[in-house]
Length: 176
Image 1: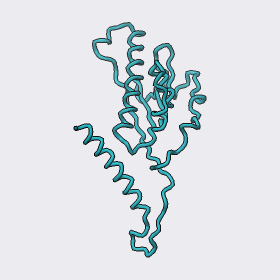
Image 2: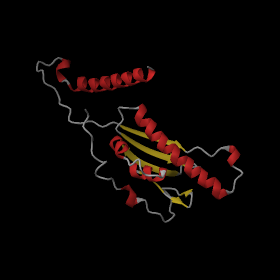
Image 3: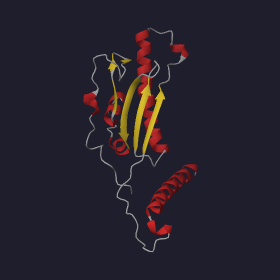
Image 4: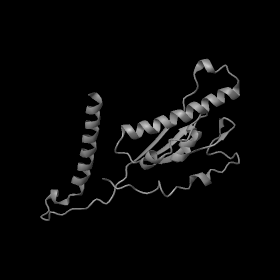
């Protein structure tokens, strides 16, 4: 019952959001004589978000450093995938998420990307690896062994080939 109510309220909220955009474009509401207004062709809502990856659990901090790094990498990849899915689910009016994930060192981006809602539905669920699913969505990162490399460092790695947008996910979706 609660799930039905939650779904209904989500749809009502989305309708109200669309209605408010239509009202803003309806010029006749401001006292004009003409009944026509601006016609919405498409709209795209973008969320820019940045978070710091959480560290591994304190009881795992006594493990060898390579094991600790692999645990951190696996946890960060899984957390990022879960956050993306939950953001799109919880914010139905958001069409595009621009994300950046900071690593253990301050202000060091280890993951970034632009994810379109349409890519989430088109993502290949058959991919076994969480990392491959994230790359398929448009998230870029570089692991050396199981250690994240900074996306903005001079370590010889060039992220530019991965940053070119894919045409299938770079299009605006019709608003309705």
